Every structure is written in C-alpha cells, then in structure tokens.
Image (cartoon, rainbow, N blue to C red; front, side, top):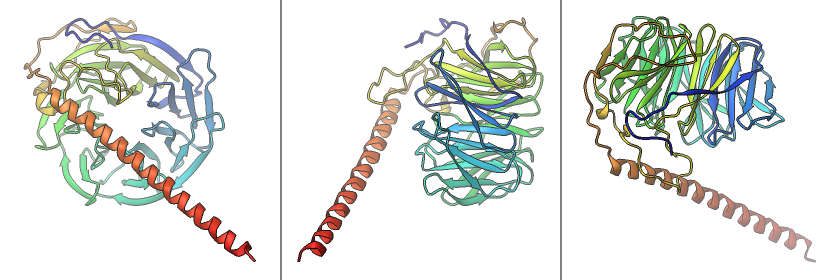
Length: 410
C-alpha cells in the first residue's frame, strides 16, 4: 500500500522508457496485472512491452495504416486495436500475435473499449458512428448514429449500461446501451472534443477538448461540475486514477498534468516528452501510469501517491482515504486561467493553489464494501456459467458415447 496521508505524497517519477516505435505513439493501455503495456503508433504497428526488465517486446504487424487506439480486455487475455485502415483487430497478446479482423466502419477507427464483462466492445470512427460489437461471436451488433462529424472516442460506463462519445461536432453524447437512444448531449465545449471517459464510480464523465479545457459533468443531473483550463494547447487524452480522486491529462503543450479532483486543484505538471503528449493511461491499480508522444517515446511513470490494492478481489484492504465513490464528493470548480510553464524538468510539482471549495471528505465505507460484493457476485455468476457449460459438455459426451455403444452393440 502506498501513502494515503493527505499532503504526504511523493512526486511521480519516471520509471521506464520504451523505444521501438518508428513514428508518433497514439495510444497506450496496461493489462489487468500490469505485466504488459500495449502501445499503438502511426507506424502501423502495435507493441507489447513487458514491465519485467530485460524482457523482449512483441511487435504486432497486421494493420495496413496507423494504429489509433488499443485496449486490453478486462481479463487481459485479449487486446483490441483500431486503425486508419478502417478495421478493428482483436489480438491474443502472446509471442505469436494472432489476430481476428472486424470490419464495418467506412473510415478511420479512432477508439476501442471493452465492456467490463468483456462480452462486447465499442468503437468510434470518422464515419460519424459509434458501433457496438460482440467479442466472442465476432460480429457487429448495432450503430449509434447522431453525431454530425468525426467521433474521436467512445467508452462504456463501469456497469456497461451507458456509452459516452466525444466528437468533432463539439458535443459529448450519453447513450443508453439497451434502448440505443441518446440520453443527453453536452454542448459546452468551444472546440472539437478529443477524449472522454467515465469516473470509476460511473456517476460523472470527464471530457478533453481542442480548446485546451477539461470538463467534468454529473451524468445524473447533467450539471457541469468542474472546468479546468490549465494546458496551453489541446488536451489529447485523459485517465482517471482507480480511486476516482485524481485525473491525468496529456496535451500538445508537451506536458502531462495530474489534477486533484477532491480539492479541485492542479497537483503536478510533468515534463518528459519532446513535442505533443498524445496519450496517457493509469494502470489498473493506479501504481503506474504510461504516456506516449509524437517523439515516438513510451514512458512509464511511478505514481507514488494514493496507491490502492485493487488487484485480487479476495484480498480486500481497507478503503482508500477520500475514495470518491460518488460524484457528490467532487466539488464544483472553475479554472479558467492557464498557469505558468513551470521548470522544464521531468517531474515538477506545481505551485500549490488554494482549493476553490472543500469537499465532504467522509469516505463511504459501506458503498465500497457493496462495490466489492458486486464484483464477487459477478465472479460467482461467471463461475456458475462456466460450470453449467462444463456440465452440458459432459452430458453431451455421455450421450454421444451411449449412441456409439448402441450402434456397435450387435
């Protein structure tokens, strides 16, 4: 467990440096156990980096054009990628690097994201559609088609019931997966919306924009909760820390920034990339985060703050301090003024700013326990399904054996 005492955090530090791509890095994602890190690039290749030192990386070639997005399945056994070649590929992330091709989009695929049950995934494309696919049946299911310009990003909510999408039509749309209807459109962005994702609680969303802003909305009341304008160029990607207390951003101003959502302030500005920082992702535990840039670099950083063991459901530790289990804990914040550039070293703590408003820092322990129980229930349900399938197969084998015996009996 990392330090959880407020004010006792250490600065994030650059841990690893991966070189192998021959063009700008466009996307990164960690596997469930943090043993593998996937990255995609304009060089049309997918790389799988091993966090264990001295391990050889895998280079997957298959896409005919730039790889724009990568996402590991919840179990980590599959890896999805999207490309400018209009296809989606599902890879088995081992040394063989075998893949299955999914075709239905008619333009560049910008985003791919697995549902939390791993049964389906969602894609976003320059053909102005969001598409939902079945993972195991390997087929296209349906389209969501209300955007009137390129769709840059689409993500499932943690419970898989909602989908959020971000577009060059300057809107963020919230969709109901079951009814396939647009529930709400958020139109407050002053430019193209580059990236969007759900808070781990599922109660709010954060969106990044070409207008240098990051905005956080409550998906139940549709109110704008927080507004940050801390970068001096387009914000290209963002990632929530698993605790929900922090938000990581990557910008064309070449910096990464870490925001403390509970206090509504900038915690760190990180300098490492030469040129635009294009992508960021926290590991599933929040212990690490990765970034990629147009400098062809993939960097892995150690968070050194608020690390929580989310790994094994059975090894439940005490809930982390100020766990944002609901967006009601997020204060309303407006940060319209870009700060100074800061010192140009790899890790710089920004000048502490007064919090705009103090949140209720009481942790909802009960909600955390209920959340863990939900995960356990889902695990039991999956095991039951597998047992049922095994029983069915055994019955079928016995029946087949009886038929063979009947046929061979004189």
